[in-house]
Length: 439
Ligand SMILES: Cc1ncc(COP(=O)(O)O)c(C=O)c1O
Image (cartoon, rainbow, N blue to C red; front, side):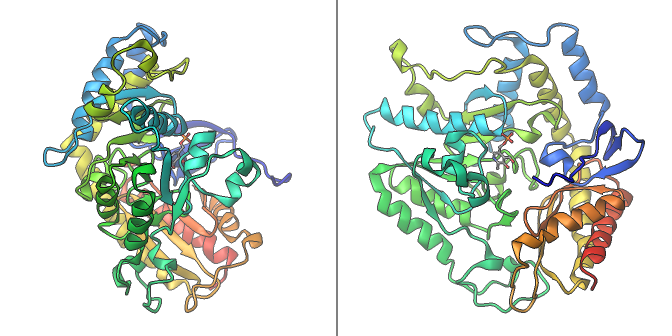
């Protein structure tokens, strides 16, 4: 950690703005690490918290239940299911954050197989660079040299396949162009073939294919070519394995649809939701699964899913999550999200004017700009130069707060952002870029 680093101290928020204790205002360019959806201090979300606070903030969920959790569970079933897609996710398990939602998802799958006569299904496959959180199980499912290196001996082994990153794919023979690499890729979808092959090899030892569908966030906002999630899920099901989708980032309309899975016409057997679940207000997560997996836990007491957290189904979190789902379902909200996505798409063309921009990609309201040392060869800057971090630090001076992933710059505005605010975000990031790497 940089000993010279002094974090901005945030005192308040208002819509897309964060206000520091020295009074300086910043645009929240990554929606407070991908959590916030409708802006800060949204009156309806504030009211949901205050209203619940008037009854109770929290009670245990072990052997007890409460109305906000029961209501939210039923709303989540409607929200995540799609009328044309199978299987249906009818059962909801609450936890606290993205890591615990994934941790419970993987345990659910392992125990489910254990209790239905397939205890040998203990393997997981996921793409390189996958990130599912910082607990040991979630780290084992993921793969990040930077994050996981010191813990490697403690992580259980999982299989990895090439991440479908068109811009950096060795099978993509297209010369670099000023466009999202997925649009001009020249390949035969080798990424799918390789995943299918690995899945096939694991066969009846495979417990689950694990994927952040459409966008691998912490890997560098890797955006997958259309059809990847769908085709790999089909391959996993052919060998009798489950499909575990991590929609901690992509869920709740971040990529356009309620679940990213919907736009790929595929449903997982287990899905993890967190981050945007409470509109960015409180830590709450949900892992949804099928009736079939749920049924494998019924019967003798030892079949119970022994997994619980002290704050499981926190009532304040459940109340605000319900209010969030209501906002997401409103026609006005849909119009807002579409406008933010279109404005970002339009304004982000500006980045191509900079010679060190190699790829600009977008899904819904997630925009990623990859900086390179050489646009023609896609060569990276040496990582120790920390260009991405420096650009974002410079953008801060122009009133924008966001975090890069290596040399990938990220803009992910809250859905409430006006066109003018998005323009300031794009301009500030561009100014930061030009300050650090003069064109
Ligand atoms: C796709 C994905 N899964 C899981 C997590 C972990 O979530 P949390 O930080 O809430 O534990 C993250 C966090 O960035 C994520 O992006």
